[in-house]
Image (cartoon, rainbow, N blue to C red; front, side, top):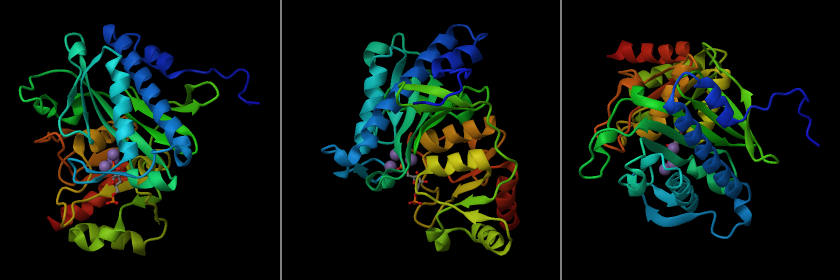
Length: 335
Ligand code: AHG
Ligand code: MN
Ligand code: MN
Ligand code: MN
């Protein structure tokens, strides 16, 4: 039996968007349809993940290397294709760009009418897939504008303020979809028995500071001294706790709800860090600003950054405003 309060108002994802967008005109229908489609992609991916150990060919590597130079997991490809399949039928999306595809995927039959581009990280945290730990999917929706003569995504090289909507799906003990269309940040939990994402937290605000710092300290000697200063500071002062899961979506979700800061800085090997601006950092920065938090590269507000190519990376410092400011203060001291 399910113990929802009988008077609980079960707000589904699509209804929630329509309610938020009542004054938006034609975009309201479109965004609602797009978010419903993202929900469907999330359900399909969650279904495969939920029994991955039992499904032939669900786990492990494909043997290929992607444009990021990473070894590709079978689940990365599956999830990448799920998004394509789901949006082929939507009519609304002309162009999809993903971490797992060197060039954008065009749906020519949608392009005359498809007014939107979808940018996504199909599986975030893929190193967690084979060990049954949390992973996610990250998405960003932009207006389809500009020319892309070489079909390499030249028209997508825009700053993060241009996002119409962004969010993620966290495949954890519950499947949770968090999104913003620029009107706050809202979370929905998948009720598998209904097959619906039901509103679970509305208008989430990130605490002004938090107990958590989240960074891969295995790279300590590859960082700038400023970040080592910050780390020494938190080691010496009470009240901080380290958490790092290997999946940005999971670490981000913790910080969204409880406060703190996530950092993926530049390293000796990767001067711009690891995280991709268009599929990872910018969507989460859009969300967090909507939740009253902050995101920076260390030099610039994250949402101001215009990438110079589709798969560009940026250092990322994201979280509670006071914690982001603290990290920044160590950086500014060393400049
Ligand atoms: P992805 O699985 O999409 O390639 O992303 C992995 C990212 C991110 O989820 C995580 O925060 C980070 O890589 C972990 O990288 P390190 O192992 O270098 O810390
Ligand atoms: Mn990857
Ligand atoms: Mn990722
Ligand atoms: Mn990924």
